[in-house]
Length: 362
Ligand code: KG4
Ligand code: ZN
Image (cartoon, rainbow, N blue to C red; front, side, top):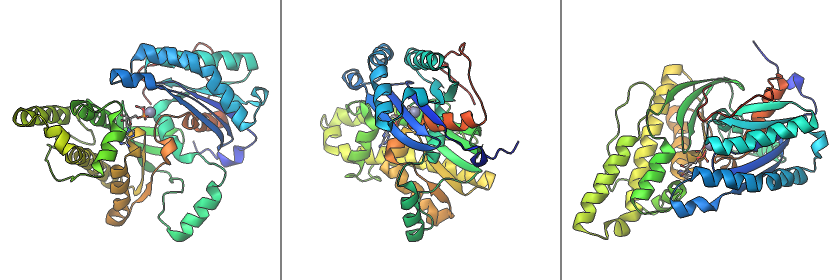
């Protein structure tokens, strides 16, 4: 079925709500234009070296009303003008999701407007279609300066490497709501490889951004970590974690300050390995599917090494690459609202019996 989304464009106002992990977030959109994007992060988890599900649920309960209220105020949109409420149904932590789902249901019921369920991983991909004031100007400037620049929307079909704390997927995106996972991790996610690697080195949670920072000062070829062999377009990162564990343990036996002295080199080497694994599979997927429109999404797409490795593929492989703005890489509700907008256009509504899903396919 061919859907002409643009011709269906009218004045649609969507409230998006995200509560799948440790960010309580709400955003308001006018059609595909972002009017507000509010995120309350939960710092409490830093104390425990990872997300504690029960604390996440409680923090969502505490923050959700304030966050939704702030998003509406910042957007200057009254709740009575909303066309629909979109929410993350899954995948994620069940207790955390329950807060957002229940809130969205109550709000839609009270306002007598449709309810729209969104798959969090699809939303990461759709973050590439978020428009914001000034985007148009920026896009035109950029297109003139560099015809292969990132500030454009990917054209269908494209491939999206979606890399987050819980998932690593290569997605074949045929249309806004027509996506197929063609490769995924068989064990740990790329974000986990960063976070667990950091934990082994004694760095706080979340380790990804810290490794990224430290890696900038290190030598990426200082140490060699094994690349896993995994069939087809799938990934595996659990072996990397184990080899990192043994590598640190063995070197600490000889020198208890080994990590302290070589932190930047270890981070740069670990990061290089993760990026090589990701880019190799992406290259294979692009070749197999004959696609040169390539995007990245999810928390790990904030990684500066991955961003530049992908940019380098513009020259090397002639790819058109699409890299999200930093604020749309990690979890946010703008991506839920944009997904909600495209679902609204085709009237893909949920009913009040909908429940969250810790695991959710698409
Ligand atoms: O998409 P996201 O915010 O949440 C999930 O849906 O999981 O992704 C969070 C993940 C964490 O593992 C975090 O360490 C990683 O993204 N991350 C990074 C960077 N920023 C966030 N990993 C590497 N480099 C970064 N700059
Ligand atoms: Zn995410």
